Image (cartoon, rainbow over all chains, first blue to last red; front, side):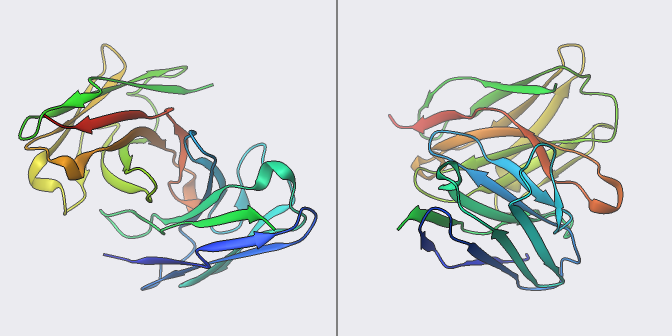
Length: 108
Length: 123
């Protein structure tokens, strides 16, 4: 099983500031990595796939980078609607797809 | 626009079988190259992938749950289903159905999700 480790667990950021979230895989997942945003009471929403490609309708302030075992999600200028929990997920290892434990982005 | 909707009992007794159905609208469940999955999330915790069924009907399950899980598809109703047997309180969670789309070289992320349904295991 590939273990996905996200850091930090909680990130306190002021609106308008930049947020950088990390995700590390226990072994290479190539670029088969997605990022999701989840707000309270809602299902996760796909933000980034292929490590760096924004999903349809996702604002340009969201960007993803990395490959292999180290990945980053950057939110360039946090808006009020961006405060949420973010999960990374690898879909490289068959048959078991795994998620990170999440990073909560909260208002500072 | 593809939409997914979970349905099923919200309360299941310990040792019984949890049964949920996901109804897909806005597209045929049997067309294209998609993986139809179940994912769960205990309150305040992270996401756990349970298993998937491919358009062809082949299945894969999380090894930690494999002995208790069955995922099936009913193409006539455009639905797929989850059965989880011998449940305990540890199976209490919000259960989501989701589609993993085929993005070619970019792989198979979960691009459409149901709203989720809470299943509580309690006597």
